[in-house]
Amino acid sequence: MREWVEYKNVIDDVVKKSGLDKSIFYDVRGNHDNFGVPYVGGSYDFFSNYSVNAQVGRSGNVNSVTLQTDKRSHLFVGIDSTMAVGLRGPTNLFGHPTDKLLAELDSELFQWDGETTEPVTKISFGHFPLSFSAALESGKNLKHLFLKHSISAYLCGHLHTSFGKKLKRHHQP
Image (cartoon, rainbow, N blue to C red; front, side):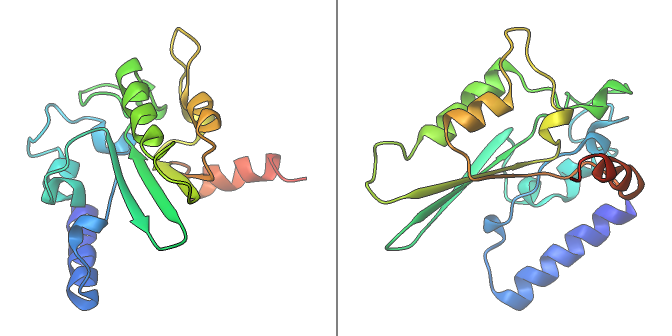
């Protein structure tokens, strides 16, 4: 909980000093935010109690914002592919997108297609790397949607320092 209180205080301080509207900040659940959480909104559901999304009333698993200039638009789409809250593990180590989540994501990524002749840069972010995201029984997964919509970047977290360093060693030329 200490980390969540610190996180909330940092965001509040950034908002206060910058004058930015808190609603432009997005955060997404990670596997530790659902692990051991008996129910949404309870005292152990720190994400629901301290995250920016919770503070501004965003509760969906797919949230987006578009930043526009006169020359270009940037669509940022955040996705929450964590398992439902509950007292379980270790399967929460992987992102578990559902058909519903993929349909919502598809709709958000499609929103600018055909609407403008100006270029739209699409960027998505979530907690789990694609290699830690399960495919559905149909074979559909996040990667297929990202390719379909020509995503420019997918930003993610999840890999902690020691594990991340070991994994990085195996993925360098």
